Image (cartoon, rainbow, N blue to C red; front, side, top):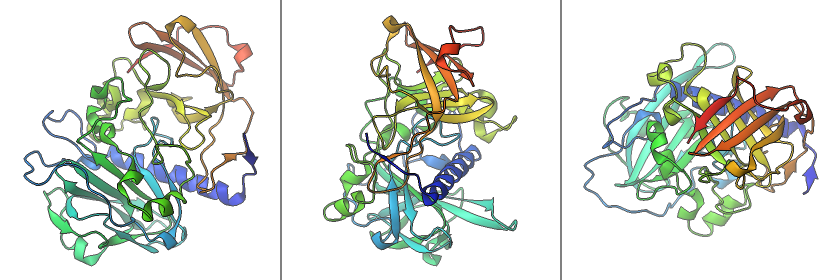
Length: 396
């Protein structure tokens, strides 16, 4: 395994990655809704796809990069972790080269279609000013969608047609300027409702955000040479190049887990419909153990609540392999180190590892598709012998 030094610029980008992921997750708190009709498919931000669509079906090839290649510093795949994003993240991050100026780079429609969803939110910036950020949801066929988030402005031709909370069908063309982005990532993804990811043991656990189970490999919908040009900016060097979020293995430890009795991904009812009564959120009962999004030989362990907050770690050792640990293996331990946030460096490689042990987690896969888990902050594995009455039970 090759190591490289972690530079000051990598530290700076790491901070931006975490802050933007937190903003995105917290933004969803105010717009996500729970318990929708099973006949209605949802999109990020509470929008729904057209139930009575009469147009074409199937996938389409994307014709234009979301940003000009000259404006992109790196493209981070799906599957990262950050704060309330406890389970692998279902969207990519396009980082502009200009991380100082808002509206630095244009954002383009990737294919012909329609804008069918829109939302805007504000955030405090330095000096206390309020700045808007925008989400757009685009339909390219009856079951093939893309979206952008964290756009810092909309083109005037688009802004004049956007009405928050109203049904939209605004035509767009591949390569059309939709807005701009700068000083932060552009979030994007492709959702293909004609397929369901095979790596979720219980897809029904994701009804609150049911687009997740339809997250497709972004790069396969681009033709050459554009595909290779974008992949050169992506530090993930294994297939699927767009990343992966569905790591569940039936009867084994690896994948996503939800605290028993907390409605799967939706979380406890007190957090539904944007409620945030104790400063926490729907993610408090989430738990994930899976390969790292970029350095896939590493194991990341992510808690919805660890010492009172959502926290991610990288296991000191990737052994035992979570994909192989089952009920017959009994209790297993992993020592927790600082989460090795993948650095947006298109050449890939592993950031300098911190071997300081920050805690230990005990895990036991139980019969019946359950998991027993308990974290011991500040403890080495040698200091942890067995579960206590504080251990919790998780399900898929």
